[in-house]
Length: 482
Image 1 (tube, rainbow, N blue to C red):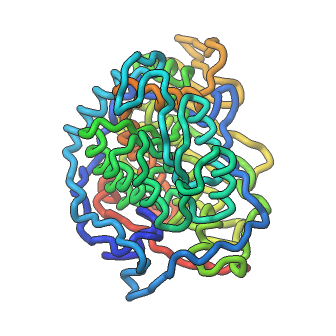
Image 2 (cartoon, helix red, strand yellow):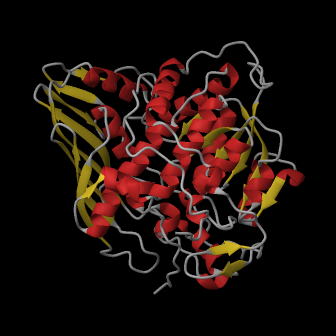
C-alpha cells in the first residue's frame, strides 16, 4: 500500500511505489571476523544523549505538504524515490560477498595508493546530510580522522548555519529543506554522512549510492521492515560498485568486543544457554520539546521533535537500544527467530507516540533465550550485555569487558576508543579501496529491534520470518502536545 514515504527516505519524497524490492525471506547472519563497534569506549556504558537548542528559530516553509487519500501524502516540489527499480538480493550471494569483504577490511593500516582520486595523505571529502547533535559528533570525528566537509544539507537554517561556520563550508554548498539531500549529493565528493532522523535514512541511502558516494550513516538504518528491505537492496548495489558502507554501531569497532567475540566463537563459554541485556537511562531529551506554534506545519514540528515519533525514530528500542541488541546478535553469532514482549508509556505521555520502557524476550536457534530490558525513566544508568554458557559468562558494562569461568579473560589492551576506531576504519577503507560492508549486520540489528518492538506493541509472539515478509511501513501521524 502506498503511503507517506518520509520514514523510508524523507518528507521530500513523492509517492512510494507499492512495488517492493524482492529482499530475502530471512537474513542470514554474516560472519563477524574483522568487522567491528560500540557506543564509546567499553570501559563504561555508552550514552547517546543529543544536545538540542531550546529556542530554535522558526523554520522557513520550504516544502508544501499536499495530502491526497489515506494511502498517499507527498510533497509537490520533489520527484520522490521510485522503488520499482530496487532489485532483489540473493541472501546467499550477499552474505558470501559481505563476509569476504568484512574479513579483509582491516582498519589499522592505510595503503599508499589513490582510490577514486583520494591519495593516502589527502583528505577524504564529505557531503553531510543532517547537522544535528549526533551528526556534528560524527562530522568532527571523521574530519579528525582525515576527512573534510565540503557540503551540508539540513531542514533547519539554524543547524545549517552552525555547521557551515564550524566546518568552514562555502555558502554555495549549503542547502536547506527536505529535498536538500538531493542537492548536496550532486556535489563532487568521495563520501556522504547520513545523520538525519532514521525515518529518512533509506531514501537518502538510495540517493547516496546512486550518486556513487561511499557512505557513513548512523544507526538505525531504518524504522520499519520496508526500510530494511530497501537498505539491504541498496547495500548490494554499493557492494558491486565497491562503495564502502559503515554504520554507527561502535561496539563492532571496539577492540575489547572484537577479542571477546573471537573467544566466545572459539568456545570460551562452552555451550551458550542464555543472555540478557539492559539499556536503562533517563529521558534522553529531558526538557527539550518544541511547541507546534513555532513551526509552519506539522512536518517541520515533528521533524524537530523527531525522537518522540515512531515513524521518525522507530521508538527507543530501535533508535537507542540497537547498540545492545546488535552486540548480542554478534556475540551469539546469529539473529533471533522470534520475540515476546511488552512495554508502554508510563510517564512520557505529553508528546508523540513512543514507549518509555520495553521488556522483550528473544528466542534464538538452539533454544537460547535473551532477555532485554530498556527504559528512559531511570536514575541509574546501565547499558550492558551478558552472555551465559555452561563454562562461563561474558559481561560488559560498568566493570569493563570480561569472561569469567573456566576460561577467564579481561580486557587489558589499554585505550579502546570505539568511535575513533570506527571513523578511522571508514577513512582507511576509502583510501585503501577495500570497502567495508556494515549494512548486512546493521539490517539484522535494526530488524531485531523492530521484532522486539512489534512483539511489545502487539502483545504477542512475533516470528522473524513472518514479520520480514510483512514489509511493514510505519504510518506518519500527528500527535498534539498535552
